Length: 417
Image 1 (tube, helix red, strand yellow):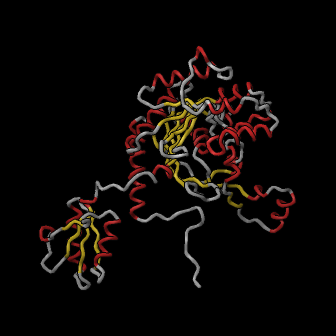
Image 2 (image 1 turned 180 degrees about the vertical axis):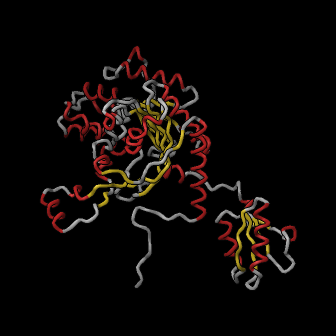
Image 3 (image 1 turned 60 degrees about the vertical axis):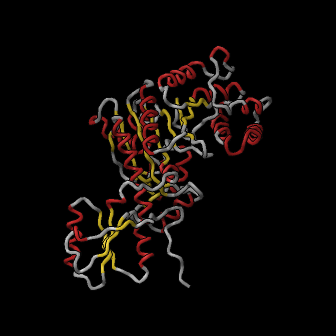
C-alpha cells in the first residue's frame, strides 16, 4: 500500500489561492509598517547555537531545531551522551523567533544604522511545537522593533503602526491589552511571593485564560503561596478597566501605571485595555507589554513589549529596545480571499491541436495589456477546469478558436455564476 505523501508534521503546503491570500496580507502589512517609517531587514534563517541558547529566548529555546556539526563521528555521540549535553553536537540552529536575530544584527551593524533604528522583519521561524490548531512548526512572524528609543515614543509608534496594519487588513473590533512588568513584580511582592518563585508564579498567572481563576489559585497554592482572597482579586481583573489612581489597590506600581496612563492619553483612537494579569511568556521583557485581542477569539493575534536588557548581552552596553509582532498565521486565517484582481486574470481555453506559437502570441498580447493570462487545454469535464481556475483567482475565460488571432477577437465570459 502506498504511503501518504504529506509535508513534515506541523508544516504546510499552500495551494495557489491560499498563497495569493497570504501574499496580499503580507503586502498590506509591509506597506503599513513602511508608511510609519520602518525599514525592512533580512537575517539568516540560522544563528550560532551559542546565541540561540544564551537565555534570551525564554522557553522558546527549548523548542529550537539544532543543526548538527559536520563530521560528527560515533565517539562524539558517546561523549555528548555521557555528558548529557546533546546540544554540544550542534553549532547552528534554526531561528525560533526574530527578536534574537535582530539583537545580533544590531550588534553587528550598529555603526551603519541610525541612532534610533526602526526595523521590519517578516520571515519564517521554526519551533519544535506539538502541532495543533493555530500552532505550527514553521510559521511566519511579522515584527516591527524600535532600538535606541528609551522613552514612550517607541511604544506609541509601535502600537500606532500595528493598529494601522490591522485596520488596513480589514480586521475590525481589535483592542490592545496592556500591562507593565513592574506592575507584575509589585503584585507578586504584595501577594508574598518569594523572589525565587517569581518566574514560576508568572508562568502560572499567564495561564489564567486557559485554566481559569480556580486553576491559577490552586497552582499558586501548590507553590506554597498564601492564596487567601486571591480568587476575588483575580476575578476583579476581567473588566479591562483603568483603576482610579486616587483609589488604586496596594499592588499597583504607581510609576508604571502612570506611564501606561500616559500611553493611553497619547493614543486616543486606540482601544487600550489595562490587564494587570497580562504576562507575555518571554523572560526578557523589562517594562511595557501588550497583546492584540480579537472579540471573537480566545487567543491573542500578536504581542510584544520592551526588552531593554537583551541587546546589551551582545554589545556589553545596554541599548533600549521595544517591539511588536503580528501573529500572521492566526490573522491570515481570518481573512477572505480578495476579488480585486479577478477581472484582470483571464483563462484562455484552447483545443488540443491549437498552434502553440499562435497561443503564446495571443497570450503575450494580453499580458502587454496588463492582464494575467493562463492557457488551459479544453477537457471533457469543462466545468471542473473552470472551477479550478476560479479557485485560483481567475475571473473571466474565453475559448480560443482558429478565428481568435487578436485579443479583440476573444469573447470573455465570467467564471462565476
